[in-house]
Length: 228
Image 1: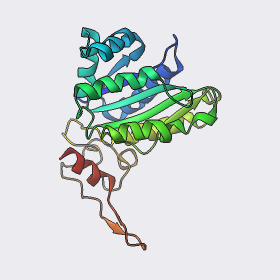
Image 2: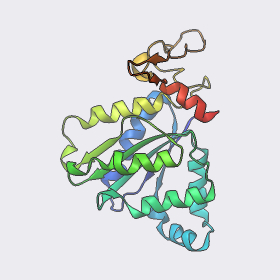
Image 3: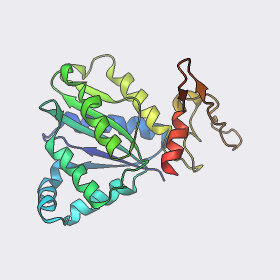
């Protein structure tokens, strides 16, 4: 079964960060039937601190790191502190990177954040996207930011669904490849097989040359190169 792990760095109980992670996971699982596991980094704070000073993870932290490494895809959600991700969130992935530099290489990741104001929405592109690009993860195009006023307002459910569809299109399915059980609108590309269609490899997306001489490489081809 496809394994989807949510890493939530919310500190409060209840947590809007956890709520956003749950919504993204539910929307992704609706496309793929993935098995979802949620890691609350708050519960691992002491072991994360000990690992940073000793180099050895405690049992709960080791299990969480194993779950992230073995996952087919990740949803990562952080509250915004000082216009960036939280220190605890960053420390968790510092520990993961120190343990295994290739833990996230080629792994699909959906980035998300919560904050008190919409002014912090750029945290997705200025902080989270560069972090996971450095870790060689495949970050889906749509990130989701939820400010306090977004809850219950128009727009957030649509962003959640769009981002979840992009992540689902990159996750393996029962057929052993992304998109096998998704309709074209969920897979995000034409020609994807519909449920019940005969099994056949999806045609590769064609490269195209832009007027300025650059060649646009399809996202699926970039992902295949990273996984290879």
